[in-house]
Image (cartoon, rainbow over all chains, first blue to last red; front, side):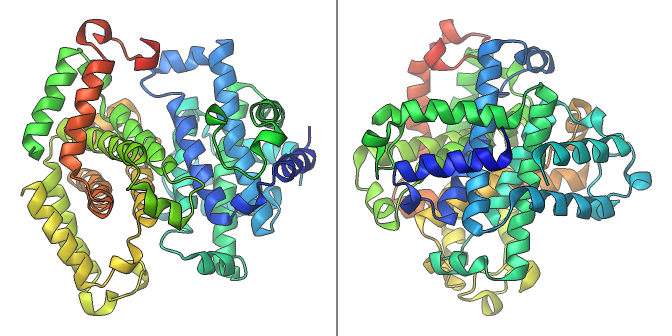
Length: 116
Length: 116
Length: 116
Length: 116
């Protein structure tokens, strides 16, 4: 599966249901955030040990995969609707992060760039 | 840019900074949700008209691209750390959605599958 | 119902279930955010008209009340666990906002204080 | 400080800035979720030890108080705008939770009521 093929399938899914009318930029961004909250729910109340074993449990792992999938799909629809390439946007942001977090300064420290 | 190339660059960025130690599944999921909140902030207080023109404003558009990029990159790290392919997971979830939302029943209605 | 009485009931509820062990500051903050995502879900896909009538529909209104309640209760537990008074904290933040957003400058504009 | 006094101050703050026009139910709920994401950011990347000492550090503690305050204030505005009493709503939800999580069944287990 490639990013482009997935996007095509996603748009076909949307159009077969006549859902484009609901897919305003606002609604898609709101939905991305809601799904991110559901992703967070997969680790709610869990200890580090439980999270470590979560991946080995087929049902919980599938749940994690599905929640990640939901966030990704809305994110792809946000980018498509706004008219930009999501992967290129990420590559651009990663370049910016490389400047903000020089490897020698940021090595081994979890400090925000504005405080580095 | 392909998904796989971006993931490789992302892991190289992480390893050059020795950040793997911070990238527990919990921390990555928490970070995904935080970034989704920042994405939501790009439309806070905006009217539908303002959101429509947001994409035409280079500075605001870049901000939107960057927030989407941040969500995507953490999501890719969640999937990589949990040991699954994010695009395959999304393709699998989309198949499930096709069953949950049959095109004839879901056409033109924004109703959750459990209430269809 | 007063804030203090509600907090007392909430702590009694927690202790009767021996749940203090799960109520680390991290878990309570994570849970607050998850519940805020569920609150957001109450308006997902809704038009402005649908949101306006939502409050008049007893079932939807009750759902909205419950999601707000869940956010509040976790927030109260965060404050209690961190050892501060939530209402005093809010009064303090409101004072800060009064300085950040002088009434004459901020009148009728939805602009962040850092850009006023 | 009481809940009612805080609400009065909050509404006076809003009206002095002529911000009621922006305070639709949708915008207030979106803002609550954004602030919950900022609250989550206060513990991003932190170990359990760092979170435990966070409360003892005046600057970090103030930051935590302010983020909780922001969530609370938007939540109060949501309830006020929707026309219900936030504390009564929470008391009602707590009663429901008491039925959903009977003390004998829920004792010491962090399991969702639907799976108890």
